[in-house]
Structures are given as C-alpha cells and as structure tokens.
Amino acid sequence: MLRTARRAAQALPPWLAHALSAQRGPVPWSAVTRGALAGGPLLLAALLAGRASLGVVAAIAAMLAGINDRPGSRRTSVLRIGVPALAGAAGLLVGTYAGQHLGAVALTLVLTGLGLVAGGVSAVGPVASATGTQLLVGGAVGAGMPLPDPGWQSVLAFLAGAGWLLVLRLVLPTPGSLSGELRLDLRLDYRFDGERAAVADVYEAVAALLDAVGTEHAVARRAALTAALDHAQDALAGPRLRRRASTAVERRLHAQYAAALPLGEAATALAWAEQAVSARAAEGPRRLAAAVRGNAPAGPLPAPTRTEPALRALDDALLHAAEAFDRGGGQDLHTRRRSPRTLARAVLGAGGREYGMRVGLCFGASAAVAQMLHHGHWHGSHQHWYWLPATAVFLVKPDLGPLVSRVLCRAAGTVLGALLFAGFAAVLPRPGGLVALVAVCGALVPVAARHFAAQTTVVTVLVLALVMMGGEPQASTGRIGETLLACAIVLVVGHLPMPGRRGAGIRAGLEAADAAAHAYLAHVLSESDDRATRWTLRREAYRTLAQARAAGARAAAELPALARHSAGTDEVAAVLERLVDTTTACAVHLDDTGRLTPRHTERLAALRDELAERRGRVGRRDAELPLAG
Image 1 (cartoon, rainbow, N blue to C red):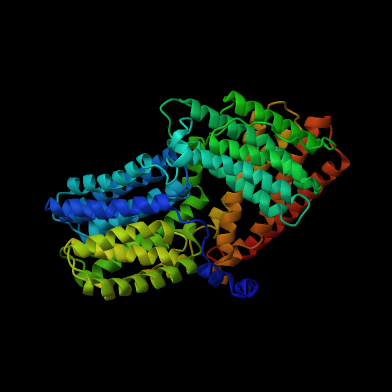
Image 2 (image 1 turned 90 degrees about the vertical axis):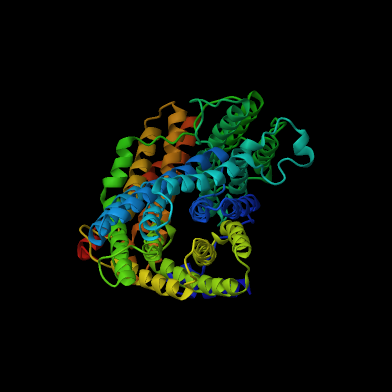
C-alpha cells in the first residue's frame, strides 16, 4: 500500500504533490506544553484584570512566537523568537499610529514601504524571514484592528506575550530530562539538552553514512549528515554572555562538535570512494553519540582497519574525538561568520529586490482592497480590515513553499478553520470556552506546523476566537471570502512581470554555493595545514549548497509558468555537490599521501567541465526567456 501511495504521489504534478505532502517526525511535546501554557493563560489573566483587548494582543504575540518555537537549543530560541517579536512590536507601533493619523492613501503607501523593507530583509535567512513576517503582521493588526488601548500599551502587551513564551522556552525542562537516572546525574544540565541532542545527532549521522558506504543510500545519508551539522552549528551559535563558552558543559559540547568534523570528512571521503566498510567502522561514532547524550567519557572505541587513506583518516579522527571527549576542551568552530557586506548583498541584491517588490506590492494591494471593501470608499475610520493583508503576508513568503501550494493550503485551511470555529462558537460558553479553545489551539500549533494547511486551520480557529474575545462579532464567512481574495491577489502578483530576471533569489543562492565550493577547493589544493579553516570552508560549502537545493526544489514545484525559470539549476547544484564531495576526498588523500591520484585529478577536471556546460545551458535558457517570465 505504501509503494502504491508513493507511485501515485510521483504521478501527480509537482505543485499538487507538494501541497499534499507533510513533514514527519516525533510529536514535539515540549513545544505542545509551552503552547498550552502561553496564549490561554495570558488571555485569562487579562480577562480577570478587565483588560481583554490587551490579552488579545498578548495572545496573538504568543501564537506568532509559538510558530517560531522550533527544535534547537534554548539560547538559539532567543534569536529565533525574540528578534521577530521585536519586529512585530515595531510593526504594531507603526501600524497603530499610521492608522490613527493617516488617510487611506497615505496609509497604503506606508504599508507598501513596510512590505518592501520586510521582503528584502526576508531574503537573508530563516530568522530574518520570520522577522519580516511579524513586522508586516504587526503592521496589519495595528492599522486594521483598532483597539481601545493606547498604542504603547498594545506594544507592551505584544512584547509581554512573546516574552512569556520565550521564558517558558528557557525555563521549562524537556520532558524526561529530569526523571530517573538523569535527575540524579548532576553532570547533566537540562539547559543544554538542545545542544547535546544536536551534537549527538551528528555522530549518529556519521555512523549512518558509514553504514551506507557503497550503497545507493550513501548520497541521501551524506545529505542527512549535512543537515545534522547545520542544525548543530546553529544550536551552538546562540547568544552567550562571553565570547567563549562560559561553562564546562559548553566547552565540552563545542569540543565534541569540533571533533565530529574530521569524522564527517573521513566518512564523506569513504562514500566518495564507494568502498564498503565493515560494521565495526560505524560502531565508534555510535558510542560517541551515546557519550554525548549522557555527558560521559568516550570510553574504548573499536578501531577500523587502516588499509586506505580514508580509513586511516577515520581512525585518526576517532582517536582525536576520544581525546577531546576526555579532555573536555578544544577549538570553537561552531560560529558561522557573515560579514555586514554579505548581509547587505542579500538584502539589496537581485534576490532581495525581487522578494521585496513582490511582498511590498502584495501587502500594499491587499491593504488597499481591504480598506475599500470595509469602508466602501477611501475615507472614514479604519475598522477591522486586517485579515486580508495579514493573510497575504503568509501567502507571499516563498520560503514557506511554492506559491500554488501555499495558496491551496491556505484556502483549504481557512475554510476548514472558519467552519470549525463557527461550530465551536455556537456551543462553547463565553468567555471560558473561548479561553480553553485558545489554549488547545496553542498546544496544536507545533504539531500542525508539519503542513501549511493544518497550521492554517489551527491558527484560523485561534485568531477567530481571540478577535471574538476582543469584541469583534463572529465573521467566519467573511474571513473565508477575504482569504480567497488574498489568494487571488498573491497569485496575480506572483505571476506579474518585474524588473530583472525571474528567479533572481535562486540564482543568487546558486552563485553563493558556487563561490563557497570553489573557495573550499582552492584551500584544499593549496595544501594548507590550516585544518580549522578547511573545516569552516567545507561547512559553508555544504550549507550554502543545501540552501540552494532547497530553494531550487521549491521553485521546481511551482506551476509550469514559474517553474521553467528554475529549470537546470538543480542540475548545477548537483554538480557542485559532487565537486565538494570530491574536494573532501582530495583533502583526506592529501593529508595521508601528500599527492593526488589520477582518479582525483580526472574527476575534478570532469566536474569543472560539466559545471561549465550546465551553467552555459542555464544561461542560454535565461536569455531565451522574457524578463517577466
């Protein structure tokens, strides 16, 4: 049955298959608990204090923070939740005062400008994207959902709501981390369980790659290793009071992460050579993973045979890891340094400009249409027209999936959520029933995040419950109509011609991956002894490649009119990936012998030629396509 379902999914068009697919994984019980303790209790406390409107704002902020409450370390969550929350508060402040003092035309221009800024910033990365989203949602709520409280009080309530969920994230232990033997082991500090799990996953991924060497699963396992390293790198990069790790636990985790880098390098070289290794080779990394989880010494590790350069590199890396585990100190290689010039290039470059123009146009157009619908003209007070532009904000975000998939999922989720809320509103007592509904939906948000339609359903129910608590009448039918209108606006704007070439963001990501891959190759061929720099360059090469391939996969799942602009980019990324794998194999071989074999040099030359050919094809296709696409 499973194979039949897979074949059916493969037979569907990519844009439809993406809309029907969902992420998999264990239930994030920690996030579920935090979601239940966030919006509902805040709303109840505000009701008891007679300030329901401020409770609504705080609960909205807690909901948005819950959407950003993703797996990882506690300190990383400070940036992942806190920075977008600050942007949301700023957007709320701007929207509130602009809505109070500006006419409809001026207000629309202000919101359009806000969209241009938020769209450009969103091109930087995931945290920046969440920051741009909350900036615009805050602006829409402030301008289109007038509240009886002064603007500064609403902003403080917003910050309090997001801050409350962040406090829960930092303080509450992970379920099971304080039970049984772990509770008695004073060496384990639950504050670092996110970092500990991320580093242990790296060693597990190394073992899985070694198991797959010489099989068809090796490529997928190497990609999984890259994802694990990216996650660990992010988990260890949270804010610290001091530049270097300030506790023994932190120093140990940093050393364990650094020790995993040569292991991953050796495993990648073995996968490149396509030489099967014994099960004994993977046992060492698995024991190291268990040692990380238990914060214990490495203990005796089985040594692999030393018959090949990559196997000798693996044995040396295991010995180095055992020493690092016992010593508890080492190099701090976790930081990913991005210069201000790099960030500015992402915002102001072709990708950032295209992203900014589409977000600004969608946000401004939806705000203008919403005001006209709610007022019948462009004058008068601004009353409850936030839903249309706020919906457009989520629909226009390309990092949330292909455009048509987002539209289908948003429309289906809103219809289902509005119908569900209409049923709940008819039977639940007020206000207690609505408070309980908010708490339940807050708990469901982390689980529903696996699919955009499911998340939309839960968020729709939650928001409709909140705005009813704030005094707005039940308007499920109207919300469905406005959502469908927002879908139409975003679809139209998404296909409109824009200055420059379509898919600039994808090409910018591919260029960054190309530059990182060649910087890594140049360092290896220089035969430098600076391994720390080599590992940093290798990490950047694989990370940028993973980002470029993810962006290309999303673009390939668009409707044909848009997908054609990304055709061929996945092939270029695949060649770059093979080039980085080959570079890693060259680095390991040079360490062992000091020279490259004909197989290495011939593979490098062939990959360079293939890369030039693939680039030429993409360039010729771009020249044949119209600017607008």
